[in-house]
Length: 282
Image 1 (tube, rainbow, N blue to C red):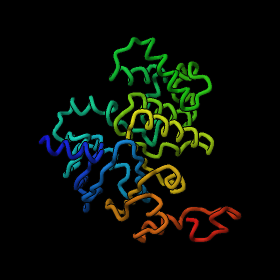
Image 2: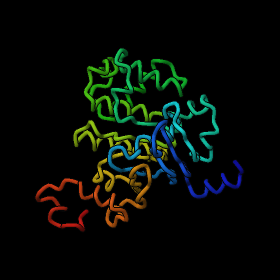
Image 3: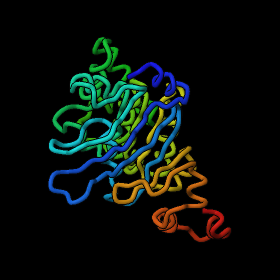
Image 4: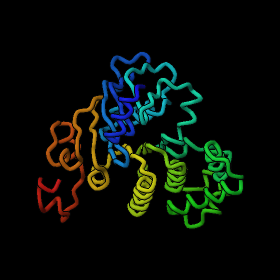
């Protein structure tokens, strides 16, 4: 990577730069992702939206280098000027979680049901920290407190099946933000939460990214959340970007029929502002 190119990226403030990213699975007739290009600035919040099966989660896995064996990948992903495909597996593993972190959509699948929550969280933190086990456990308790656990110490002693899906999701968010990564990828992080806990988790994400200057890529179906929380939005359809730009500009004046259909699919409750104000309230 030449110094002039790195200096240019520093000047634009881009933390993550994706160029021509294409992913094809073995036996598939068409790519799952096709020629995606976008950038994510320091501290920015970017939403990736689209219907089920449009490639949103595949994008997150591709950025992390966690695609299944046999997947064909072309294009480049740069994290602060470093092309991730140029790294060895061990080098990429060290960056994963420390500089580029993921909140999984399904926390049950990300945790070992045979081990207590505290042991698993401590193990995850130990990969990137050198504190003692006691210090790491105390840090885990603190992190759980920030995402709404009323009794973090007790929760650390429980097995995953003894906690609700919402609690497990918040625990995974706590771990993901622990190292204050340069980019945080959140794949439907509020799916298992009620409205109150959704707001609490979003406040945590907002605070942690603001403190660390991390960029956030939020994968979600919730366009109301996107409008109120994200600076920019990308709309995917069949693995392609069909709409993108500043969030309010895209949602108020979509350039793609796909975006229009997603907006039209938002339920409107009788008596809500959108119901009384019509199309201009979208």
